[in-house]
Length: 616
Image (cartoon, rainbow, N blue to C red; front, side, top):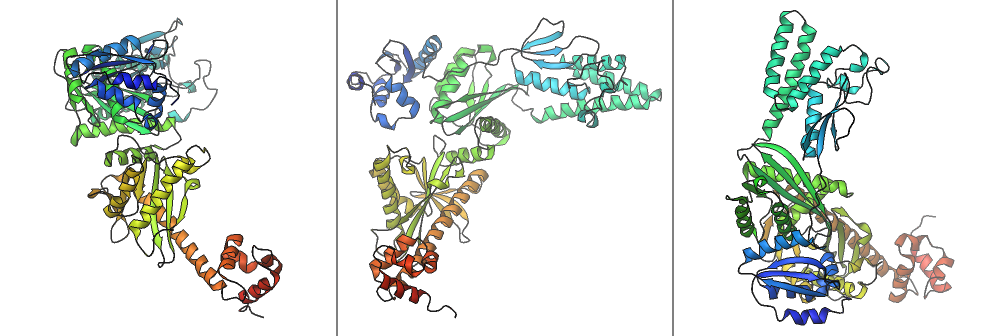
């Protein structure tokens, strides 16, 4: 840490009281760069200035710029929360999570002229067109425009009418019965205007009346034997009914509610909010954050910032979130006071509300996948695994270990790495057991983990070394005994890396996750189960492959000493020099004689020994 004020700040912390309050971090210019609240000021603020190297990148960067800090004592933690919200809103500190409202206003445009088109727009221009709005939600505008164009079969292409009549064939939308094909020149202006006006009425909320009018016109056309015209009305009616039925799927028993869920990948996170009003989904918004490593902190900070800046009348009575966090009751009290009536925060575990939370989570995963090179399924599996293991962050870098032995003479270990849900093969490592005599899986695993973590201390400043990066999670191919053996090694070396085991059933299929003292069932969480199974299969394959290869080499190396003039040292040097058994067998006398510690006579003897069984 290159902050020369660290010693001063650490000493100042000792004078803080163990009382609730708000603290303000300032840079050398006196600017407030971070505002936080605390149940006990001394404990919270002191955490910033001790074990600095273990902070996340964002906190580390913030602490490096702190020149001084102030604090305000409050009577309660609730008062601290209210004051914190007020100060963040007033100062917009650089290192607080700030919600950027980039939505702006949105409009539905009905273009000028007899062949008007309905489009979604981000601004209102002085072009003679008719504009409906403004609307805050881009989701509502785009969804509405898409629906009415399909229902009333209005053109969405770039062709201009009547200039482009009969110039090209109708597009795919016509064949999908989503466009009346104005481009053919066979649609009268009267018929088009009728469809356009019905679409505008539908947007204005007269969907039920529009449906009744269309039914009357369909019956009238049928009575007049205008069957083609009646069929068009029928198709339009069915389209409206289909859209209405689709909307019923997202209706809920809770009239007004917000659904909030978070997805994370490495240091990036997405918070998705589904807004349901009058039992209908009316909007979806999502926010992307970077340098996020603690989802609980993000969850609390987001909810506080998002709703403290919202007008009281817009806050719903019910918030459904994906995970509980420490200050849930405080936030309920704060929002209830602001709204003037009780606001509840729920964490649903089953039923309709849980399904809606999962729907929000899926949206967050998909949005985040657009920001990265990972698929939604990969992100979901990592998030699901984190929740299953009780981790506060998503383990983007996972190391897994397995021990394999073919007799007591060939005991090895393999380490595989998964980064963001995918194998990172360049980081795979092989270990030959050096300190354990005989077969003792627990002792072997302890040796391997200790050697790996020592390599971190030795090479942490080497950007080229894969050992320079610590894992977010360690998975051992074994049960709770392996975990109990390894965890003291990890903690004793000063690391707070979660360690779990991967347990197989009697058919060698992944069955559970082992913890020190028990197991966590995993089959019911499909994405996490698939990921853990893949990791366990991969580490087993890699380790067994190394074990067989080493055993084969060891056996061959032992057989070499049967050749005259070849001792244990020469046999080992030959294997080290030629790398493979095949290379030694294919080498001629001259090549063999040029190997370390070899001479012409020993090379001739070895060549004769290796080829004694060759056919004449």
